[in-house]
Length: 398
Image (tube, helix red, strand yellow):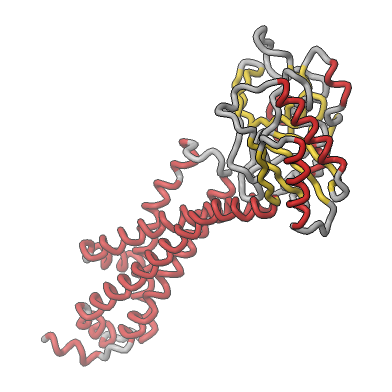
């Protein structure tokens, strides 16, 4: 029976080729959108590595034309700003940082380690950054005042970076990076849990914290002042905070944003392309579904004699109903197989290294199930109409 159905499909290859092509492209679109959605969902379920609740960002504009230069006066002014912020009653902790979670500013560095290049995201932070964001130490310690007197530079890395560079070795006290006479030696003093600066929807990556000495004339003053406020602190405190900061640095300007607001903006940036892709995929599937129904209906009209002869030779309504559905499933299988040939190239060629094989497999199964379900639904009504053809209908073509 199956061989006979394949022969029927082959005999109408011109008509069926269009259906297979539609299924092929629909499968690819659903696979891309579904895989991206599953990747974001998998990211969302992973630990974030920091706490954003009750954290505010104070962006500092020093009113200078370039960020590449700074003066000792600017360094001293930032130190006074940090000290002044810590005296305010609603503030639990404050720290300076060059980049913030959920912001679109980032700094990346490629380090040569044991003959290979390791890509890391980097941020320079002052001492109480861990208190502001509630970082969890896995090994070692955070930066402390005694680090300022060291001849080497202390760094804190996250667990992903520690695993990639040091494997199962204890990274505490080890040098980070190969020796370079033009750069100071970096030593790991602590490891924190995986730190995903870009937020819940971002993928896994390496992160490294460098110690910024607040008030030290050789260290650039940070562009952001991150503060943790007491729970229940209202927006009225923003005005008080800005006035106090403006009194210390009247020539500078300050913009205060809660991290919850920055988080919402980040979510919109991540989800807008997915929503747009989902809408396109939905309309594409709708158009494909209507097209399939139309093509199947046309085939039914052209095959009325065939269906009538089948009924006349003893085939039941159920047999005819099943034949039309199985034929459609065969066409769907051919379209999915063509799509699978392209999809399998993704992990082989490592085209999207940030997506794991597990997510790719889940996206493939999701796309396959969606296309089969669509084909089955579209075939139900035409197959039911085909089953109603009476043997006498074949006589009209005699």
